[in-house]
Length: 537
Image: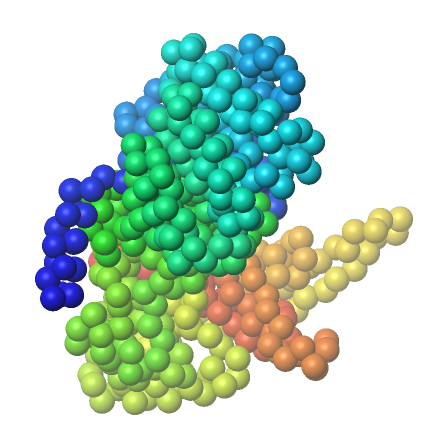
């Protein structure tokens, strides 16, 4: 009987459209370390419009210079509707006299989202006004905005906390907004402390008490429940979910739309953004780049590690049938599977990884044990090939005997010195290489020893291999592997290189940071040369 009911419920939900309301530009901008410019916000608006979200909360008109400029330069959109955000009028004045409400009207958006207090504690302690005056503030503000031909969404701030402590008053506040003409009543877990069973129960009760109201959910993530709470509210009758891309927001963030959307659309068959869901990873990464925040690798659905498999048993299972260790196909949301190479890898992991390499394709199965053994020895020394696929591929070539030797290192030296009267340290590197029958000895200066060494190698190779001038170091990371050893600790250096079209990652490990850097640089150059030669062929 339960199975039949579940099947019926799923069929019903396939026809249920859920509105997606994004507040990355307002709530998300309150994240520590996030500072969007007007140009940033316009870029994000275009990304969200292309993703197909229904509503984009652009900001609070008049609150800051960026939002003032933004509402004057909003781009034309294909799908999304822009909303302006602000609060109800101040106590003891008319709505027409309130500056915030008038600024909202000047923003010239069709939809205005007003937030008001629905928790009696906040009314008396934060607003310092009477409960009755707060109800008038809500009703008169909504009615005033409606009288100007605008659509109004009402964010019921602190609603769930208010309902748990004074349910009658919280409902009165909702009715004040609804009766004044608010099209959506958004129930907010502003402090982010509720759990999903509470959200479901309370949302269901609200729907019964105000049956004609169209409800939404706005959850914060202080209890790490924002996504679950948003889904619970939808199951209880809410037709709109509010949240931010990547879960950006004040304190612990807002509900993450990158998890809410695929859970509702893929797992529960609601209609949200349709085929655009395949753009989700691209949009998440693009907005992370604009926000200048590294995208969390372990973020569900959209993270670079969301479908990464390291253990040999897992990789073996996925190679046979992806459903063994993946809850959805990564391609559904624009992600891809990664087989990580480590000392935990088995034969299946190696085979799967080799299938996705650029230069090495087919190898004899008899070579697999040698590869695994070499990886285990190197990782014991501190190497990590998860983020250094180019070094891994060179390792395979070395074992197979197919790695080309473009040059032989005869030696290098690095000197650091200061000039009289100058605080800056001058760094010089000299490199001696044998290229064919020729010995090349070059000297180069740089901004530090690693840069000087890199420049010296390029200078030595330039006449024979001019393509090295195309190689640019995109990223350089150093990690201490055994901090208890102090300055004698082993370090791991990871380098990301690009030739303008391709990117590749290499790694080096040593107690000497210069040697570790040298190893990563050499791998980077050799891989680039092999890649260039493969293209020529």
